[in-house]
Amino acid sequence: EAGVAQSPRYKIIEKRQSVAFWCNPISGHATLYWYQQILGQGPKLLIQFQNNGVVDDSQLPKDRFSAERLKGVDSTLKIQPAKLEDSAVYLCASSLDKGFTDTQYFGPGTRLTVL
Amino acid sequence: AQSVTQLGSHVSVSEGALVLLRCNYSSSVPPYLFWYVQYPNQGLQLLLKYTSAATLVKGINGFEAEFKKSETSFHLTKPSAHMSDAAEYFCAAAGGATNKLIFGTGTLLAVQP
Image (tube, rainbow over all chains, first blue to last red; front, side, top):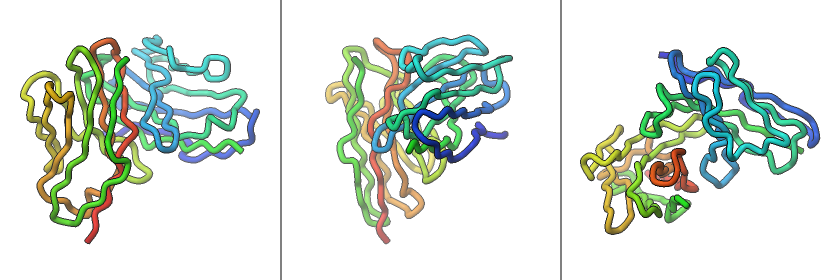
């Protein structure tokens, strides 16, 4: 079974530039998550999708971050404009259903450096 | 608000020694609890989870954790460390007032030969 795929693996940008990350979840998984993991901290949920609808985006900085999951499969996370404090690893995860006891499978992450 | 505390950001053990990684949670309602492992340049992988069944939970790679309500703890143990156990370990909680996973800050485990 293929795991969660993410690209790119690494990205370096200047502040105020825009950047986009892509995630392909495990086939058949209805729920998709984006997490932000700042160095020295645990992952923090940014947004959760159930199919193509948003379940929770309470911690997404909506003035600069946006995410979509068209057709309920792949997802993109965008930052525009980026700030220095956005430097982090962005993790995508998926699960069969939206219950928090459902096992979440994580991708390898995208390491973003904002200069 | 739900929070998870991992005592010790770095733990070092000798190969063959006991591994003990500590996790405490704060909640008025016993939550669901998880341990994840993250190897370098890889995503998080679930080791084990507690979902209000047996208090002693066995996971992959010989790890286990015990839920102790009186101590609000969910410590991770392994009787004998192996070099391949070197990684970062995250404790997480969900349930109660939150329906999302709340992660601790992680513990980096080093295994010395």
